[in-house]
Amino acid sequence: MNKKVIVITGASSGMGKDFALALLKEGHTVYGLARRLEKMDDLVKAGGMAIAMDITNESQVASAVNQILSEQEKIDVLINNAGYAVYGTVEEVPIEVARRQFEVNLFGLASITQKIIPGMRENKSGKIINISSMGGKMYTPMGAWYHATKHALEGWSDCLRVELIPFNVDVVIVEPGGIQTEFTNVFQEQLQGDAENGPYADALKKIIASTKEISENSQLSPPSVITNLIMKAVNSNRPKTRYVAGAFAKPLMFMRKYFGDRTFDKILMRQFQ
Image (tube, rainbow, N blue to C red; front, side, top):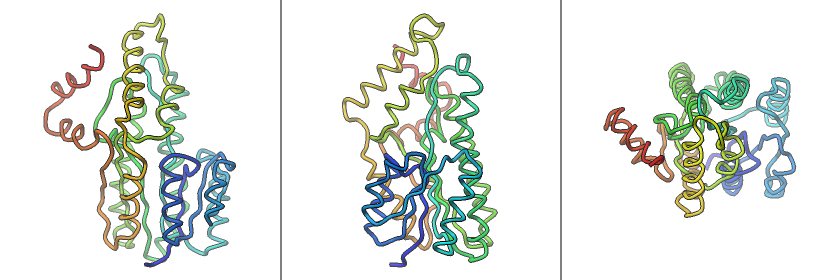
């Protein structure tokens, strides 16, 4: 196997950490980037490198990329995994909160990608793997801002893929479904809106209850199902442009594509009945 220099953002927990540990076992050189350096101790113990970096801080992003290039002289694979979800009604989510969602999920991702592209282009080799979501192809109640970032990432990735074809750089989109990570806890913390007295109180309470039930009943998939896709994409000479796996992903994406808007709306609204 061709050993690669791999950079993973959001590597302090969940899928990102799972990617890092699995790729280290294969003998790759792995750099984990995240704000919480102490959360990557196990990655370092496994033989990886960890760099503290806020994806929205331009100078930190530039410093991290420069450090890796000075130490390794190249980056073969970038896995853009950092991201989170803000849920709440369009009316009640403050614009500054929505803007932060885009800064992390799209603009921060774009910033580190811009800084890594030149080396890949010059080497005429590389892979950029963007962790999107089934939410980039569909929608769920109260998820307007999160879905907006993932829909944007899908289109952005498609354009980037075409731009980099002449330079033999692959752009891959991974679309996870429901995965057992910190996502559910962060979802509860990031949920915006007044669930007690606001105009959407009933709907907010029901989506909170629905999300909690899904998590507690183990209806979500382990991170390993996505890690398996990442391994395939990293090790393939000709990776797919898209990979899909995880709870609910394939059936919901199928229904969204073929059932039409009104029917899909009715399916989603069952959460509030």
